[in-house]
Image (cartoon, rainbow, N blue to C red; front, side, top):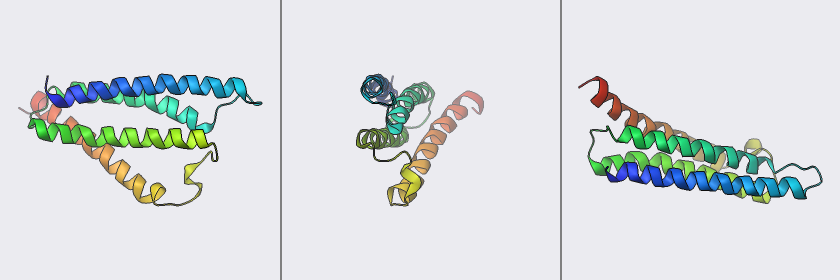
Length: 140
């Protein structure tokens, strides 16, 4: 196995662990608060971490059939993984601050250009990984 799928698997494990820990934090907020509800962004972080875990596993498997050089595979995988981690850290930060239930209620650099970069990075990286898989499995 090349380095890129190994990185994806390691990130998958980290996302899973983060999701499980976010679940503990969510439970703690639910038990301690008067409304028995966790902050919105703790809930989002909990679910997103689990979804990013699965996405990283799929990326790892697709990369196993990728025809591109190892360095390019690392870049293709690293960009969406970085985007996942950045989004997750933002959700956790907002959840612990518990000052908003909608980060998009105010336009900022993060909610505009940051989102454009996140969208381009996630979709672009996954599309490149998928295209490499399709090339080797269907078009060769």
